[in-house]
Length: 247
Image 1 (cartoon, one colour):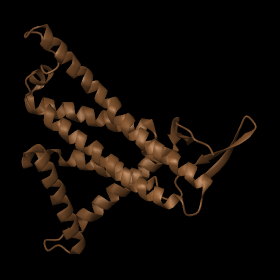
Image 2 (cartoon, helix red, strand yellow):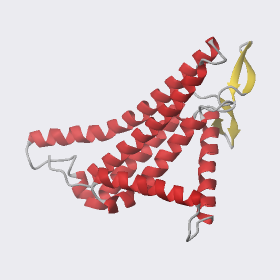
Image 3 (cartoon, rainbow, N blue to C red):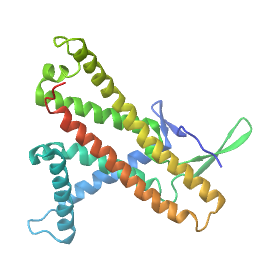
Image 4 (cartoon, rainbow, N blue to C red):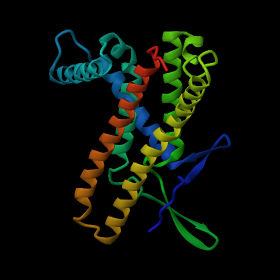
């Protein structure tokens, strides 16, 4: 049984190392892009059952976001970002639980010892992926805040020089909190998904036939919850960033 915090490098492309988690990320992103393209191509004025289901699902998500934000127009504005983050994380989590991920690969020799290198690894069990998602989320939060309030009004939440020392230090705490969001987003998602992978690996090693099934179902549920938490936190932070909040 081999547990590695860092992803295994499969090869290089133009000098850029390609890891097994990156391969799974590309596969997931490609599936989402192709599915979206085919869905748009098949839209009809009189929807069939599949289109009706998708429209009902999207309307439900928009309603949920509208209730969280208190404004449907804001929900429509944030929907592409939040939905993309949710779907990308969700499908990465679910594909990472499927048979073949982490179990199909090849052996390499290092220092006279054979080590197994899986071809695919759950993307969100790689801290690089979750850190990239966290940076995208926090950067988008700042961007929407600047677009809504203007650069100086947005920055004035963090740099307060005219209201006394207490407000100044409160603003610094707010600024530190923005950087802390990156760590919170990335390590929460990484920790939960990596811990689930380790749990499944241990169970499959000890009892490889029937015992892993309920844990696999549990990981599907955890994957959904983690995607929902990441997307909802992004949505709430977007709401906070686009409001003028007094210190």
